[in-house]
Amino acid sequence: MSRRTIRRLLLLSGVALPMGMTPHAPARADATLTMNVVMPRASSFFVGVYEPWKEAVERESRGHIKIVMPAASLAPLPRQWEMVTSGVADVALTPNDYIRERVKLPFLAEIPFLAPNSIAASVAIWRTQQKYFAPANEYKEVKLLGLWVNGGNTLQTVRRPVTKIADFQGLKIWVATPNMKTALAAFGATPVTAEQANSMFEYMSSGIVDGAVTGKGSLISFQLARYTKQITFFPGQLGYNLETFFMNKHKYDSLSPEDKATIDKVSYEVLSRMAAQGFVDQDNLADPLIKQNGIETHQASPAFMAQLKSRIGFFKANWMADAKARGIDGQAAYDYFRQTAQELAASSAK
Figure 1: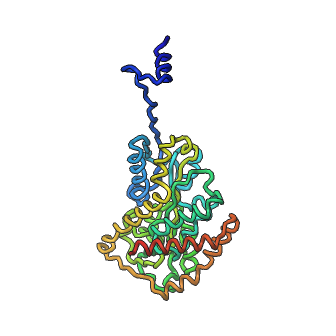
Figure 2: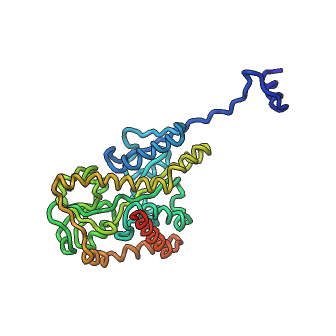
Figure 3: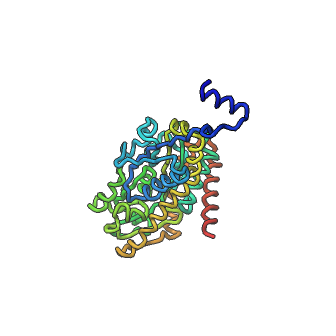
Protein backbone atom coordinates (compact mmCIF):
# COMPACT_ATOMS: atom_id res chain seq x y z
CA MET A 1 0.00 0.00 0.00
CA SER A 2 1.43 3.37 -0.98
CA ARG A 3 2.26 6.16 1.46
CA ARG A 4 -0.38 8.35 -0.20
CA THR A 5 -3.08 5.68 0.28
CA ILE A 6 -2.14 5.17 3.96
CA ARG A 7 -2.30 8.93 4.51
CA ARG A 8 -5.74 9.15 2.90
CA LEU A 9 -7.15 6.26 4.97
CA LEU A 10 -5.80 7.75 8.20
CA LEU A 11 -7.39 11.09 7.41
CA LEU A 12 -10.75 9.46 6.65
CA SER A 13 -10.67 7.46 9.89
CA GLY A 14 -9.78 10.47 12.03
CA VAL A 15 -6.50 8.98 13.20
CA ALA A 16 -3.72 11.45 13.88
CA LEU A 17 -1.03 11.41 11.24
CA PRO A 18 2.48 10.33 12.14
CA MET A 19 5.29 12.85 12.22
CA GLY A 20 6.21 14.02 8.77
CA MET A 21 2.76 13.30 7.34
CA THR A 22 0.94 16.47 8.52
CA PRO A 23 -1.26 17.76 5.67
CA HIS A 24 -0.59 21.23 4.31
CA ALA A 25 -3.10 23.45 2.53
CA PRO A 26 -1.84 24.53 -0.88
CA ALA A 27 -0.06 27.87 -0.67
CA ARG A 28 -1.94 30.82 -2.03
CA ALA A 29 -0.33 31.77 -5.31
CA ASP A 30 1.00 35.28 -5.71
CA ALA A 31 -0.73 37.53 -8.24
CA THR A 32 1.06 40.10 -10.37
CA LEU A 33 -0.80 43.08 -11.83
CA THR A 34 0.71 45.34 -14.45
CA MET A 35 -0.41 48.92 -13.82
CA ASN A 36 0.31 51.30 -16.66
CA VAL A 37 1.60 54.75 -15.72
CA VAL A 38 0.93 57.30 -18.41
CA MET A 39 1.34 60.50 -16.36
CA PRO A 40 4.62 62.12 -15.18
CA ARG A 41 6.07 60.80 -11.91
CA ALA A 42 5.92 64.32 -10.47
CA SER A 43 2.23 64.72 -11.27
CA SER A 44 -0.74 64.52 -8.93
CA PHE A 45 -1.77 61.36 -10.77
CA PHE A 46 1.34 59.48 -9.70
CA VAL A 47 1.74 60.98 -6.23
CA GLY A 48 -1.96 60.88 -5.38
CA VAL A 49 -3.26 57.80 -7.21
CA TYR A 50 -0.87 55.31 -8.81
CA GLU A 51 1.68 55.11 -6.00
CA PRO A 52 -0.66 55.09 -2.97
CA TRP A 53 -2.99 52.51 -4.56
CA LYS A 54 -0.02 50.26 -5.34
CA GLU A 55 1.22 50.56 -1.77
CA ALA A 56 -2.24 49.90 -0.34
CA VAL A 57 -2.77 46.77 -2.44
CA GLU A 58 0.62 45.32 -1.58
CA ARG A 59 0.25 46.16 2.11
CA GLU A 60 -3.28 44.79 2.49
CA SER A 61 -2.43 41.62 0.58
CA ARG A 62 0.71 41.12 2.70
CA GLY A 63 2.71 40.97 -0.48
CA HIS A 64 0.57 38.34 -2.22
CA ILE A 65 -0.34 40.88 -4.91
CA LYS A 66 2.57 42.52 -6.69
CA ILE A 67 1.95 45.70 -8.67
CA VAL A 68 4.39 46.23 -11.53
CA MET A 69 4.66 49.71 -13.05
CA PRO A 70 6.57 49.71 -16.38
CA ALA A 71 9.14 52.47 -16.79
CA ALA A 72 7.42 53.74 -19.96
CA SER A 73 3.74 53.88 -20.83
CA LEU A 74 2.45 50.86 -22.74
CA ALA A 75 0.03 53.01 -24.74
CA PRO A 76 -0.62 56.72 -25.39
CA LEU A 77 -2.97 58.59 -23.09
CA PRO A 78 -6.06 58.36 -25.34
CA ARG A 79 -5.70 54.54 -25.63
CA GLN A 80 -5.72 53.47 -21.97
CA TRP A 81 -9.15 51.80 -22.22
CA GLU A 82 -8.18 49.71 -25.25
CA MET A 83 -4.84 48.85 -23.68
CA VAL A 84 -6.56 47.33 -20.64
CA THR A 85 -9.45 45.61 -22.42
CA SER A 86 -6.98 43.95 -24.79
CA GLY A 87 -4.86 42.71 -21.87
CA VAL A 88 -1.70 44.69 -22.58
CA ALA A 89 -1.95 46.07 -19.03
CA ASP A 90 -4.17 45.03 -16.12
CA VAL A 91 -4.83 48.37 -14.42
CA ALA A 92 -4.88 51.96 -15.67
CA LEU A 93 -6.55 55.31 -15.35
CA THR A 94 -7.96 57.56 -18.02
CA PRO A 95 -9.39 61.04 -18.26
CA ASN A 96 -13.04 60.47 -19.10
CA ASP A 97 -12.77 62.71 -22.13
CA TYR A 98 -11.13 59.80 -23.95
CA ILE A 99 -14.08 57.51 -23.23
CA ARG A 100 -16.87 60.07 -23.57
CA GLU A 101 -18.68 58.11 -26.29
CA ARG A 102 -18.78 55.03 -24.04
CA VAL A 103 -19.30 56.69 -20.66
CA LYS A 104 -21.51 59.76 -20.44
CA LEU A 105 -23.32 59.78 -17.12
CA PRO A 106 -20.44 60.54 -14.68
CA PHE A 107 -19.79 63.81 -16.55
CA LEU A 108 -22.38 65.21 -14.17
CA ALA A 109 -19.40 65.84 -11.87
CA GLU A 110 -17.76 68.21 -14.38
CA ILE A 111 -20.57 70.77 -14.42
CA PRO A 112 -19.07 74.06 -13.13
CA PHE A 113 -20.09 75.49 -9.76
CA LEU A 114 -22.23 72.45 -8.81
CA ALA A 115 -20.05 70.74 -6.15
CA PRO A 116 -18.30 72.81 -3.45
CA ASN A 117 -14.98 70.94 -3.53
CA SER A 118 -13.31 68.04 -5.29
CA ILE A 119 -13.38 65.53 -2.42
CA ALA A 120 -17.11 66.03 -1.97
CA ALA A 121 -17.60 65.84 -5.74
CA SER A 122 -15.56 62.64 -6.03
CA VAL A 123 -17.35 60.76 -3.26
CA ALA A 124 -20.71 62.05 -4.48
CA ILE A 125 -20.13 60.96 -8.08
CA TRP A 126 -19.07 57.49 -6.91
CA ARG A 127 -22.23 57.14 -4.83
CA THR A 128 -24.33 58.48 -7.70
CA GLN A 129 -22.68 55.97 -10.04
CA GLN A 130 -23.66 53.14 -7.72
CA LYS A 131 -27.16 54.39 -6.94
CA TYR A 132 -28.31 55.70 -10.33
CA PHE A 133 -25.85 55.02 -13.16
CA ALA A 134 -24.98 51.33 -12.66
CA PRO A 135 -28.09 50.03 -14.49
CA ALA A 136 -26.91 51.81 -17.65
CA ASN A 137 -23.86 49.47 -17.57
CA GLU A 138 -21.52 51.98 -19.18
CA TYR A 139 -18.47 50.26 -17.66
CA LYS A 140 -19.48 46.74 -18.72
CA GLU A 141 -16.21 46.12 -20.61
CA VAL A 142 -13.99 46.73 -17.56
CA LYS A 143 -13.91 46.40 -13.79
CA LEU A 144 -14.56 49.89 -12.46
CA LEU A 145 -12.35 50.62 -9.45
CA GLY A 146 -12.92 54.32 -8.84
CA LEU A 147 -14.08 57.71 -10.07
CA TRP A 148 -12.76 61.08 -8.99
CA VAL A 149 -12.23 64.65 -10.10
CA ASN A 150 -9.11 66.80 -9.89
CA GLY A 151 -8.68 69.44 -7.22
CA GLY A 152 -10.80 71.93 -9.12
CA ASN A 153 -10.05 74.31 -11.95
CA THR A 154 -8.73 77.81 -11.52
CA LEU A 155 -8.00 80.34 -14.26
CA GLN A 156 -4.28 81.11 -14.51
CA THR A 157 -3.23 83.97 -16.77
CA VAL A 158 0.12 85.35 -17.84
CA ARG A 159 -0.79 89.04 -17.89
CA ARG A 160 -4.03 90.66 -16.85
CA PRO A 161 -6.40 89.37 -14.15
CA VAL A 162 -9.88 88.05 -14.94
CA THR A 163 -12.39 89.36 -12.40
CA LYS A 164 -15.42 90.16 -14.58
CA ILE A 165 -16.99 88.69 -17.69
CA ALA A 166 -15.57 91.40 -19.96
CA ASP A 167 -12.03 90.35 -19.00
CA PHE A 168 -12.39 87.15 -21.03
CA GLN A 169 -12.60 89.10 -24.26
CA GLY A 170 -9.53 88.71 -26.45
CA LEU A 171 -7.93 86.00 -24.31
CA LYS A 172 -6.69 82.68 -25.72
CA ILE A 173 -7.04 80.09 -22.96
CA TRP A 174 -5.66 76.54 -22.87
CA VAL A 175 -8.30 74.02 -21.83
CA ALA A 176 -8.11 70.27 -21.32
CA THR A 177 -11.69 69.17 -21.93
CA PRO A 178 -14.52 69.75 -24.42
CA ASN A 179 -16.69 70.92 -21.52
CA MET A 180 -14.22 73.67 -20.65
CA LYS A 181 -13.84 74.56 -24.31
CA THR A 182 -17.58 75.15 -24.50
CA ALA A 183 -17.63 77.09 -21.23
CA LEU A 184 -14.74 79.41 -22.14
CA ALA A 185 -16.31 80.16 -25.51
CA ALA A 186 -19.56 81.02 -23.72
CA PHE A 187 -17.63 83.40 -21.45
CA GLY A 188 -16.15 85.20 -24.46
CA ALA A 189 -12.60 83.80 -24.58
CA THR A 190 -10.97 81.80 -27.36
CA PRO A 191 -10.38 78.27 -26.02
CA VAL A 192 -7.32 76.37 -27.23
CA THR A 193 -7.43 72.61 -26.83
CA ALA A 194 -4.61 70.11 -27.02
CA GLU A 195 -4.57 66.33 -26.67
CA GLN A 196 -1.72 66.12 -24.18
CA ALA A 197 -1.61 67.85 -20.79
CA ASN A 198 2.12 68.35 -21.25
CA SER A 199 1.35 70.91 -23.96
CA MET A 200 0.10 73.30 -21.29
CA PHE A 201 3.69 74.19 -20.35
CA GLU A 202 4.69 74.66 -23.99
CA TYR A 203 1.69 76.87 -24.74
CA MET A 204 2.02 78.99 -21.61
CA SER A 205 5.81 79.39 -21.68
CA SER A 206 5.96 80.28 -25.37
CA GLY A 207 3.08 82.76 -25.26
CA ILE A 208 0.82 80.76 -27.59
CA VAL A 209 -1.96 81.27 -25.04
CA ASP A 210 -2.77 83.96 -22.49
CA GLY A 211 -3.67 81.49 -19.77
CA ALA A 212 -4.95 78.06 -18.82
CA VAL A 213 -7.86 76.47 -17.01
CA THR A 214 -6.13 74.13 -14.59
CA GLY A 215 -5.58 73.35 -10.91
CA LYS A 216 -3.08 75.01 -8.58
CA GLY A 217 -0.99 71.85 -8.69
CA SER A 218 0.01 72.64 -12.28
CA LEU A 219 2.32 75.30 -10.87
CA ILE A 220 4.38 72.28 -9.74
CA SER A 221 3.40 69.41 -12.03
CA PHE A 222 3.73 71.40 -15.24
CA GLN A 223 6.14 74.09 -14.00
CA LEU A 224 3.81 77.00 -14.64
CA ALA A 225 4.88 79.07 -11.63
CA ARG A 226 7.37 81.10 -13.71
CA TYR A 227 4.73 82.09 -16.24
CA THR A 228 1.48 82.45 -14.31
CA LYS A 229 1.04 85.99 -12.99
CA GLN A 230 -2.65 85.96 -12.01
CA ILE A 231 -4.97 83.27 -10.62
CA THR A 232 -8.73 83.56 -10.28
CA PHE A 233 -10.51 81.19 -7.90
CA PHE A 234 -14.20 80.36 -8.20
CA PRO A 235 -16.63 79.15 -5.49
CA GLY A 236 -17.67 75.65 -6.51
CA GLN A 237 -14.69 75.57 -8.89
CA LEU A 238 -14.53 76.36 -12.60
CA GLY A 239 -15.53 72.77 -13.26
CA TYR A 240 -13.53 69.62 -12.66
CA ASN A 241 -11.74 67.06 -14.81
CA LEU A 242 -13.23 63.60 -14.34
CA GLU A 243 -11.01 60.50 -14.17
CA THR A 244 -11.67 56.74 -14.15
CA PHE A 245 -9.52 54.06 -12.53
CA PHE A 246 -10.21 50.59 -13.89
CA MET A 247 -9.00 47.02 -14.34
CA ASN A 248 -9.18 44.27 -16.92
CA LYS A 249 -12.40 42.46 -16.07
CA HIS A 250 -11.09 38.97 -16.86
CA LYS A 251 -7.98 39.57 -14.76
CA TYR A 252 -10.09 40.61 -11.78
CA ASP A 253 -12.35 37.57 -12.19
CA SER A 254 -9.28 35.28 -12.26
CA LEU A 255 -8.05 36.42 -8.85
CA SER A 256 -8.55 34.35 -5.71
CA PRO A 257 -11.41 35.41 -3.40
CA GLU A 258 -8.82 36.77 -0.95
CA ASP A 259 -7.13 38.87 -3.62
CA LYS A 260 -10.45 40.17 -4.91
CA ALA A 261 -11.31 41.18 -1.36
CA THR A 262 -8.03 43.09 -1.14
CA ILE A 263 -8.70 44.97 -4.38
CA ASP A 264 -12.24 45.72 -3.23
CA LYS A 265 -11.04 47.00 0.16
CA VAL A 266 -8.75 49.67 -1.28
CA SER A 267 -10.90 50.66 -4.27
CA TYR A 268 -14.36 52.09 -4.98
CA GLU A 269 -15.30 54.95 -2.62
CA VAL A 270 -12.02 54.54 -0.72
CA LEU A 271 -10.03 55.06 -3.91
CA SER A 272 -12.26 57.89 -5.11
CA ARG A 273 -11.76 59.79 -1.86
CA MET A 274 -8.03 59.01 -1.73
CA ALA A 275 -7.42 60.18 -5.30
CA ALA A 276 -9.32 63.42 -4.77
CA GLN A 277 -7.42 64.06 -1.53
CA GLY A 278 -4.15 63.39 -3.34
CA PHE A 279 -4.94 66.07 -5.89
CA VAL A 280 -5.96 68.54 -3.19
CA ASP A 281 -2.75 67.86 -1.26
CA GLN A 282 -0.67 68.36 -4.38
CA ASP A 283 -2.53 71.57 -5.18
CA ASN A 284 -1.87 72.89 -1.68
CA LEU A 285 1.87 72.28 -2.10
CA ALA A 286 1.75 75.03 -4.72
CA ASP A 287 0.74 77.72 -2.21
CA PRO A 288 4.35 78.65 -1.35
CA LEU A 289 5.09 79.04 -5.07
CA ILE A 290 2.27 81.54 -5.37
CA LYS A 291 3.96 83.71 -2.75
CA GLN A 292 7.51 83.11 -3.95
CA ASN A 293 6.68 84.09 -7.52
CA GLY A 294 4.51 87.07 -6.61
CA ILE A 295 1.42 85.61 -8.30
CA GLU A 296 -1.67 87.71 -7.61
CA THR A 297 -4.82 85.84 -6.56
CA HIS A 298 -8.44 86.88 -6.99
CA GLN A 299 -11.73 85.45 -5.72
CA ALA A 300 -14.65 85.63 -8.13
CA SER A 301 -17.26 88.01 -6.71
CA PRO A 302 -20.98 87.13 -6.41
CA ALA A 303 -21.72 89.47 -9.32
CA PHE A 304 -19.07 87.80 -11.48
CA MET A 305 -20.39 84.34 -10.53
CA ALA A 306 -23.91 85.35 -11.49
CA GLN A 307 -22.67 86.44 -14.92
CA LEU A 308 -20.85 83.13 -15.42
CA LYS A 309 -23.73 80.93 -14.29
CA SER A 310 -26.15 82.71 -16.61
CA ARG A 311 -24.11 81.55 -19.61
CA ILE A 312 -23.75 77.83 -18.89
CA GLY A 313 -27.28 76.53 -18.44
CA PHE A 314 -26.71 74.28 -21.43
CA PHE A 315 -24.45 72.03 -19.32
CA LYS A 316 -27.37 70.69 -17.33
CA ALA A 317 -29.65 70.49 -20.37
CA ASN A 318 -27.11 68.48 -22.36
CA TRP A 319 -26.44 66.13 -19.47
CA MET A 320 -30.15 65.58 -18.93
CA ALA A 321 -30.48 64.56 -22.56
CA ASP A 322 -27.70 61.99 -22.12
CA ALA A 323 -29.34 60.63 -18.97
CA LYS A 324 -32.66 60.27 -20.77
CA ALA A 325 -30.97 58.44 -23.66
CA ARG A 326 -29.45 56.01 -21.13
CA GLY A 327 -32.79 55.41 -19.43
CA ILE A 328 -31.75 57.14 -16.22
CA ASP A 329 -33.87 59.45 -14.05
CA GLY A 330 -31.70 62.48 -14.73
CA GLN A 331 -33.35 64.91 -12.33
CA ALA A 332 -33.22 62.46 -9.43
CA ALA A 333 -29.54 61.70 -10.11
CA TYR A 334 -28.70 65.39 -10.52
CA ASP A 335 -30.42 66.33 -7.26
CA TYR A 336 -28.81 63.41 -5.40
CA PHE A 337 -25.32 64.31 -6.62
CA ARG A 338 -25.68 68.00 -5.77
CA GLN A 339 -27.19 67.37 -2.33
CA THR A 340 -24.67 64.66 -1.46
CA ALA A 341 -21.74 66.86 -2.49
CA GLN A 342 -23.07 69.79 -0.48
CA GLU A 343 -23.67 67.63 2.61
CA LEU A 344 -20.20 66.08 2.40
CA ALA A 345 -18.57 69.49 2.03
CA ALA A 346 -20.54 70.90 4.96
CA SER A 347 -19.68 67.89 7.12
CA SER A 348 -15.95 68.15 6.41
CA ALA A 349 -15.99 71.87 7.23
CA LYS A 350 -17.21 71.26 10.81
